[in-house]
Image 1 (spheres, rainbow, N blue to C red):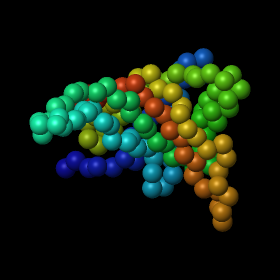
Image 2: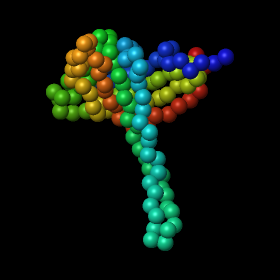
Image 3: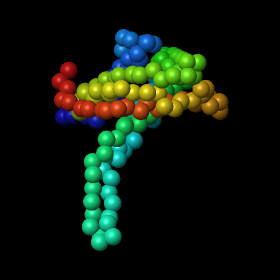
Length: 145
């Protein structure tokens, strides 16, 4: 019987000129590791005669990554974030996500860090930090690993 666990997933991220060999991301928040926003893939308009017209749109994919403040992978995102701020430039990334439980591999192409928390929120305990990467494309294929 198959499962839907995300506990055995892997997310590898390579960032041009920073981390050229893929870094395995780990240390996610307990209820949220990574997610993507819904993509808009069509634009619709209704003419004055009431007829619907539609056209396909290319659309980026926004991914949210949520890490615990003590995650070993925090270094990857903190370095990416601070390097972009210092350089006043973008650094591009590519990634791979493997979800063995559903037999899928996702290839993430040409991504840019578009948002991030510079420090964790301090409450009773330090809170998870959120980062957003916007990808040019995300494609999937079968995975049998």
